Amino acid sequence: MLSHQLNAFYGNITAENTIRDIVPYVQTGNLHIAIYDHANMLMHIATARADGEEGPPYAFQRQFLRFNMTEVFAEPRP
Image (tube, rainbow, N blue to C red; front, side):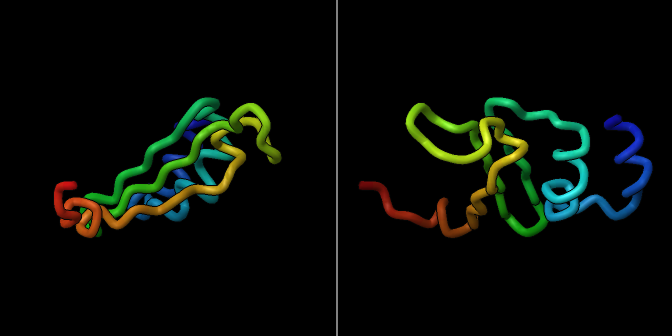
């Protein structure tokens, strides 16, 4: 299933279409998923549902958080 999606998006694999079209199709990432966009210094993360939370159980079914790693690495030390 992964090879099918990688072939379908060959030459145009982005973080966005990985989140939208590849990960849900392959249904990988039960516990957590991290997708890195090195060119734009972005990291996208989704985690499985925690005890007591609402919503879909698996990371690949849940909303991703996007982190601007340039800003994260620019944070001063506490």
